Length: 160
Image (cartoon, rainbow, N blue to C red; front, side):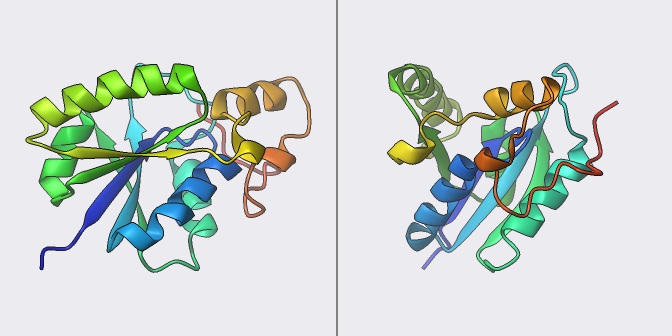
């Protein structure tokens, strides 16, 4: 039987408790999950790629079925290259659904039938986004309630 590989693509700038929760809920469905950091040179990130990768590796160090990688360009091209047939996406609200539905339909066409599996965020995480966490950090607030315990902002490597 062919290995069921899923890609969970995002910027993870930074990873949130919502990202972690969705990845762990997806584990029973797949043989392997790759937390894939999408690299877009035109997009300004708060944290360096190395920092984001390290946080992901730390958060999922206890899970052998989860690995961390980075990619550029189209997500579906990355999936083809590594043999993944599934994408994992989280939905917090109706706006997420509308946006992600369109992307999943396009990915299905250009990705030779790649399937997107949607996970609806649990209520306690539906208000958390990396964007909100970044704004809290930039404003000098405490973002620790919204990120996994292994994410420590003291000494974090910021993007240049």
